[in-house]
Image (cartoon, rainbow, N blue to C red; front, side, top):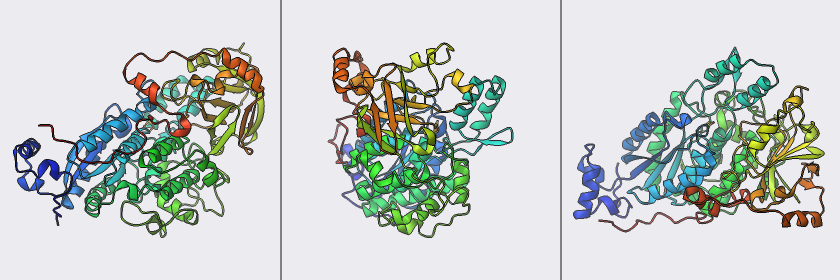
Length: 573
Ligand code: FES
């Protein structure tokens, strides 16, 4: 059952019959492991983002036990290790500021330890890209296990979606349509089980990307966290990673250009979060696959959305799982995918999904009768976004996709909050709200503040959407005609920094353009008066600001792009 392999990297620690081997084995034996645990069987690292400060991942200790069972059953030796966890709802100023830091933790923890293969336990938004990025820079055989979405929220007899429901209800409170007491009651109704957000927010999107990339067993994305089939998948993943080590099935054989093209197309078909654009670019950068912002437009902007899920639609991830989950959706669009892309189970995407049944056509629509046509993420360019900006038309108001309006500019999110509900504020529903200094360097960390709240006086008119433009990101659970990731960002002198109140802005999504009606000479004049914000003096934030790349490149650190492999480092004793 056990394959002994003297060149397995864990044997550089455990296989030596000398003082160093004694040190590595003796301390590891403390829980009571017998001698044969070190006989050359695959050592599987279980990379755990459990934390009580990351509520979406708080069930991961139990999940890790199922992975361990699977590893042991297959003849491997499981060793669980913690890495920095990123709780989207808690971390300030924004969890995205720490995605790259967590990825460094993952990368160095894998490379520096006696590990032959890795199981990544990931759930809340940034934990998934951080773990994939770090693991990709090592390239060992790796399998992803997501924590799974929460059960549907239930509030006063109705389903409510995490995130999406918060934005809707908070606007209702501001418009005087919902009491504060009802709003507070909804807190316990929305998030009522283990798991991550159950809308097609960033967590569900990235779990779907893991599966579409071939980095997890089929079905991983949608199984609800409390459903015991999630534990079963974890156990099977534990078994499978042992075989992957024996087969030397490293990440580079799975994360190919074809795999990323599949992910970009699936992102359109699920109506996924715009955040996936930044994360996929960063993951591709680590594994060395050329992927560009323009690929979203060329590969997927005209694909239909097949999934009727919040925030673009009605249903939630629990419904998606019962309808057949991602395999059923990918089967529907299989002619558009690279069916020969290899996945972690040793089979191709085509083999995995070609017989996947769909049990509910209301949730997972067919290509012939899609939920929404032309729903992929669109890349905008123009004098306001020379390096690009993104918009998710499926979450926008159709009548605003072509719009010309007067700019109302906010220099930061605090200024917006202080002015937005003033009845004397000079703004109407035809204006274009511009928020700047919220990009990777500006915030810093590219916060999810791009879906700016609308002015109260406009909400009171029953208007629920306006064109909004920023260099920020937006929560995947949010919606609206919101232009995001404008690059280059304002705080490095991007054109967004030069816009003034009253400038006319044109958004033309069908033509892929974003323009401010100010001529080049005037923009150049304004640029001479622009000054860069002061740099942070010390610590991680200084490192971040000095090295983070722009959004159109994935906002990874310049010095982290690429891979260092997993050669065994030198001995320290
Ligand atoms: Fe963790 Fe939404 S807050 S996934």
